[in-house]
Image (cartoon, rainbow, N blue to C red; front, side):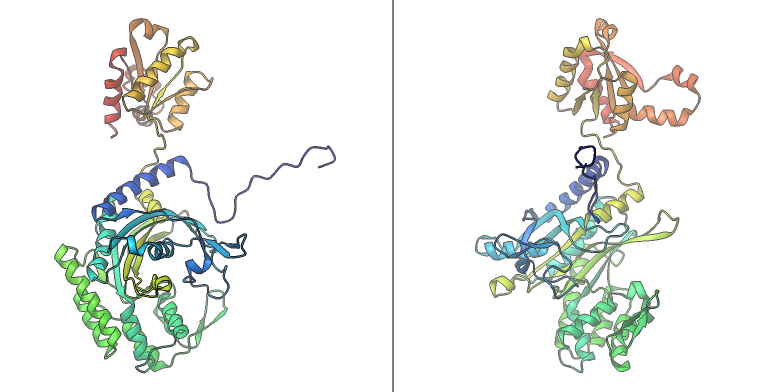
Length: 496
């Protein structure tokens, strides 16, 4: 209580790394998701929902942060003093679901899920602590057909939302090939997990710090842009040369790339298994018509999560956009995933071979908006029935009810403002059409309609020429009251 005796008001504030999403963006996201869901279902994936909260040991520690139970995740203790956390992805909860229901699931089990996930990352431009993922997975098969289909689904989904061929590429690699390279680095034996993980993290930085930077980090280390020295992995020059030779692998076709990979992995059994898996995927993609213009083999693709065991893939948007500072940039990866054959074995004690991918909903939506592929229409009901005369309220209720009964979304204006403010409200809330009826119209058996979208466009074209606007008025017209539904449908059909 202050000196005046008034209670202290709570400050309206939002948690760092979180955001409010307005109606236009929610509507745009829903339209995008609907198109992608159609692709998923065309391949036979079915929906699943899992809880936002899971036990920490069930989620597992597969994020780059390692030692403490709450590192990188939002975690707390429940009433039984067990660690619980908000899910950081949708794959770990899926593995728990499969382990609990394995005896009753048809295998292969194909599911998709869209939901928010949470990570305790450092917030930044376009980087949030709560964000949506849209996953699809095939559980219960080791066939490379399933992994090839992951690449195909990513291509089809991007094209379904309006990303043209040439504006994206799906990059494909195999963790087994990487393991084979690391075996060569280690002199023919399995490299220690900690060292292997460190080497893979350096490879994953290639796009950010460049070839020379990776080479330095594989060795003694390097100074970053701030001047701070970052300790390297400590490989010898000969070992570094093996890794860099692998990273330099290139070819005009997928086959040329995996043939070159085969020479780098040498006699490594697991490395050759990885090359053979890439060969099988390539054969399926080629058979289905997914050429090198859509899917390529990229030896630098690692994927950050630790549970991947075989093929890994990511879809990258390749077109440039201008950021707020006028700088040209790319959106980068919007899809990512891979094979995770050991994740469910944590619960079952036996392998349940699985593969899948996850779409970054928010990043893809931002890309579509930058391309002008998806608009910001926010109105759930495209028609506003205005109230010109309070004595005709019953007639307005009849109008809006008739439209709703016909399956047309319609809103009855319930405020007190005059007709000018009602039109502004209709326009600001994304309405397509406003219906006006006063006592004169009622006496004539007519209603007036205003096509708000057309009106807005004509206003832009006409500008200050008010006289021409008043003379033409093509966006506003009258129609018989009996033609209400058909006239509204005709206007809405222009924008279907």
